[in-house]
Amino acid sequence: MPKLESVRTTAEAIGRITCIKTGEEIGLLYQWDNGETQAAMYNDAETETSSRPGKQAGETLDIAQP
Image 1 (cartoon, helix red, strand yellow):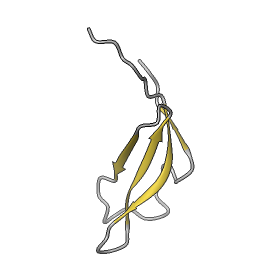
Image 2 (cartoon, one colour; image 1 turned 135 degrees about the vertical axis):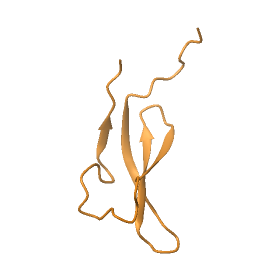
Image 3 (cartoon, one colour; image 1 turned 30 degrees about the horizontal axis):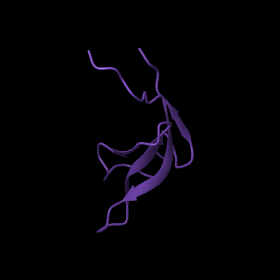
Image 4 (cartoon, one colour; image 1 turned 45 degrees about the vertical axis):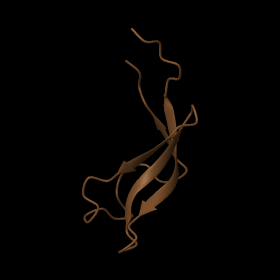
């Protein structure tokens, strides 16, 4: 079994992803505590609003490890 070199446990939203055509927010860019980045796109960008529940840019996301 391969050894995990870096475990990702915490991510911080570092930016918003916007649609080039509409200018609407369609996701967030996260940076993990090991330096990796990951885009998280909303499921249905047309129904998302700025008052949506969830993380905003600058907040931290904690991931529980099994």
